[in-house]
Figure 1 (cartoon, rainbow, N blue to C red):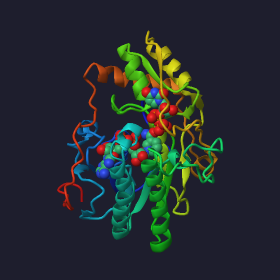
Figure 2: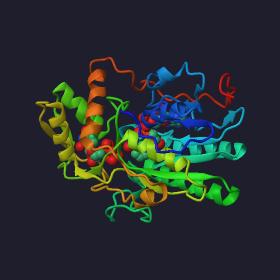
Figure 3: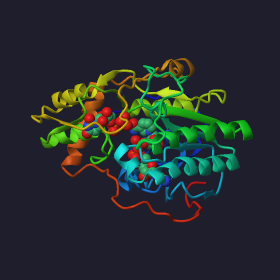
Amino acid sequence: MTIQISIPARRSLRTLVAGGAGFIGSHICDTLLRRGDTVVCIDNLHTGSLRNIRPLLNHPNFSFIEHDVREPLDLEGRLDRVYNLACPASPPHYQQDPVGTMKTCVLGTLNLLELAREKSARILQASTSEVYGDPEVHPQPETYVGHVNTIGPRACYDEGKRAAETLMFDYQRMYGLDIKVARIFNTYGPRMHENDGRVVSNFIVQALRGAPITVYGSGSQTRSFCFVDDLVRGLEMLMESPASVTGPINLGNPHEMSIEAIAREVLACTQSASTLEFKPLPVDDPKRRKPVITTAERLLGWRPQIPLRKGLEATIAYFALEVAGRAPSGPNRRPPRRPGRAQLALARSQ
Ligand code: NAD
Ligand code: UDP
């Protein structure tokens, strides 16, 4: 599926994408390279994979540095933009090492803010609808301050992302840094990993394998699913918006549906004979989620364009290859490395 570009032509930029070997990050790298930018991708390959960026590794404007954002960065040369996507996003992954997740959110954002400050670069933080917790206001506008259980198993991610937003705005107030904060709602698409653990990838892989579809709880809880191309277009539009547009801005598809309904949609699209298997609902699982996107519409002229059926078909086509063992994606199953202070002298991307 091609990304519909509605960003005006602009000069070529040098952009750092932290978490660029992950699901969303690798799509951002693709888009920026197509635009003519020079891209420095950094990732510790915790949930991301070199397979997601393999086609880019020989591109003259692309370089990859294995680095953990919890450590400070030295980067030679100019830098215009920083996208911070570095953080595990799936509940099973971010809960596996909750202290590590909190450090990634807080220290990682701090280190990238310092880099952006040193280079006078603009920085965009991938925040999340999880800052609203299990919301008591529905749908969720950016003005809603949220309802997060600070001591629950999701808090390492929710509170980490909330603290990261705080750091972004404190750097803007203290140092005049050019910041952007996107609150991303549930996004799906090709390059999610088959063992990612999130609902769309789980259901598609289960349906393709003829395995039971694991619906947690009654399946009446809701989410609103955005296809990755729409999201990446929104992130880029936010990044290139006037400096006065800082966010936070919700980016998501307001088409809300129950988890049971998404299971049935996946079954219909895959023509699978799998049956639904109901499992316990995880602790603190939000009951409802739907973005108010009037801010993105008004300030960016953005709204999602890809209907669920079309996005699911593209995602299913990807996973059909993945399940057959042929698609180029997947996290490396090794623990995060702590490489120390990286000297990021770049051979190719000045
Ligand atoms: P992902 O797990 O595929 O990508 C995250 C990437 O960050 C991976 O490549 C991982 O290896 C890397 N990473 C993790 N910790 C790191 C560290 N300490 N140092 C360097 N790299 C590290 O997940 P995704 O869905 O692509 O999410 C990307 C970003 O978007 C995350 O910050 C996530 O919180 C945010 N987000 C995603 C969604 C969604 O629905 N996909 C929703 C809200 C927010
Ligand atoms: N979910 C489910 N079966 C799965 C994975 C997830 O029913 O195999 C549910 C989960 O309990 C939640 C919703 O689907 O209510 C979305 O879960 P996901 O982990 O994708 O995202 P998040 O909860 O972070 O929005």
